[in-house]
Image 1: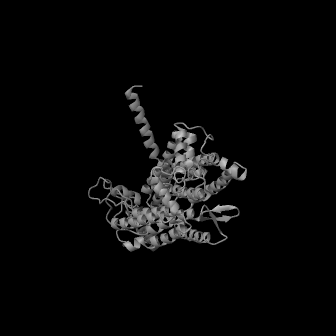
Image 2: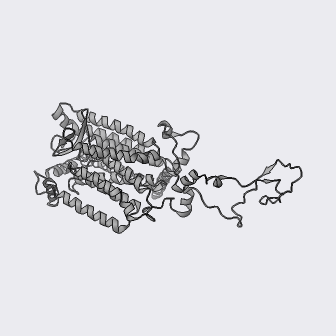
Image 3: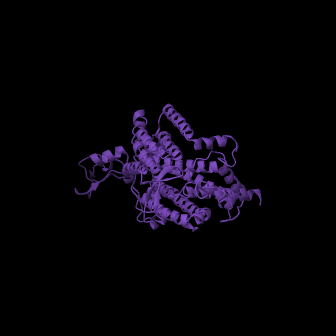
Length: 499
């Protein structure tokens, strides 16, 4: 091929991608597509990675897979409900959702209700199914924190208003999680709070002080228990304990090395035959690398990176402060969890026990992550361009197939107050009518009061014609919609935070 052909093909591809991304519902379609692909890969790899251990424990290679399918099915229902729920309803439900998660965290500590395993008490059992309340606390804190900080304007709000009640409530939730004990989830909760405060516009010196306190606290928690300290010291020791703390990370790297470029093939992993502990859970990325090779691993990483790009795109385009904060925080949560999990599997981070979102075995984690993807899809439907595209006589495409309701435009506090007070009528009221006809050739000038043109009657009403924009004597109108203001000023109506 000639260089000109390659250059022309590249330009054609770039222009096609730009046209695709410029469509109003692209973000929504991408979120739904990424969700479907991740769910498909996750179920396939959970079945492959858990078959051996499930058969050894229960005599069935499909026991864990069946449980995962049940939770994923429930998660898909929550995804659909979160995707179609009105935004104001989500904002109002955030506090009850947080209170329910706190109550469940307390019930975990009650003897007879909480289920212990692996030296921790983190689960509740309902009818044979186990539920991990700390996973629900992540989503609840994202929603409630965004609802609280969306009412704070950093230009007028004090530091106390930015920190209270978010930080005290998050500290209570983190305390209930750390006494289980569960340090990895506590770290994620701290990251959620820091993300919310950063995006909401907390002054830099206070943010740095708060971040320093969290780092010191995490280091103290890491060395508070002997097994955590052993993991960290072993990581920095360079594999000095190959049969102890370094056994699991070494086996994960061996599995990745065995996969090569294209992998051994689906279901052909050797590490899952009890060589790699928790192969179906924390270290499922090692099985992906062994069976699907480097290509499969890069596809998974690419899906998470694409999800991060789309999530930040949704947050940047959102006009509603609540949707902006919530979607950005959820996106950071997905990226951080994926980075930490893949990081300790490939050996660049110490083992923490954080699961790979949606792909790892874990019913409550899959359920919660699917619900948060539904919240992202809901925010994508409320982009200004998406709202305009879905306000036609009948929805088209995926929105019509899913029977989604038409999204509502965001109305800021000032516009809501004006609507309640009735002052919005003056904005939409037409100019006072002028009776009589307009002199020919002077369409922009109203005739003097009392004069009528021949043939006109007293019942005729004529409105003065609008001046064109080319008329210099006519003052330019100020954009009244958030979209128009964003085009004029380069920023959205909500200028909080670091956007």
